[in-house]
Length: 242
Image 1 (cartoon, one colour):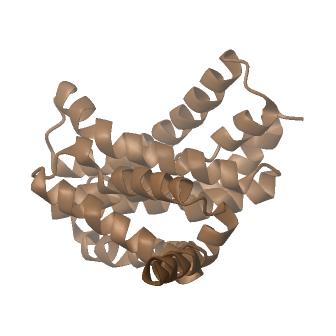
Image 2 (image 1 turned 180 degrees about the vertical axis):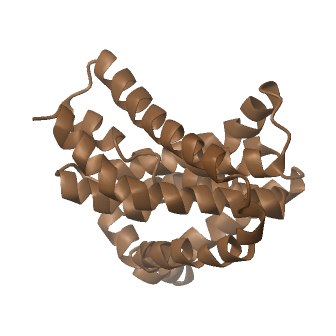
């Protein structure tokens, strides 16, 4: 009986420890990655989506407050910015392949960015969402670290923006291959650039796992979209919310 009591005490201690939250996050992603590889990289078995579901279910089951969880997982949150910047390496390596493609890439970037904002804000408005939700829709297709910075500049919730950004990335990584196949888009640089604009970091990770050229162009699109959006979205937001 005392041994059982000791195990319970240990479990209570671990479930309230920030270190447990960090371990839980890494373990959940590893489980998701294993399933993703076992499913032969099927987009429906997205490792990030699987990890989110696992973490959400577990912290709900053990009744761990989100603040306690984030205290342990914030180290990974801190690394998001560094991981985004590190994508400059494949971009640099792929610069030679950009010759002759600058104009279609710039047009695609501008069109994709505007459509992302218009569709997100438009659908949310039609469904009767309030200003806090429609405002968070503006930077949703920018990689999360940049999106949260944009949210702070325009005065909307960074947390809500991060949720929309991650959700957009997951859905984009899952659905993009099917959509691009229907459209008959076969060139890896075209597929990668489209995924990078619409599904940012999570989509870029997916693109790298399929083909290096797709990953290079996805990271290029994500980086360019992030830089341009950081300047353009606050202007667009204040233009339509005066």
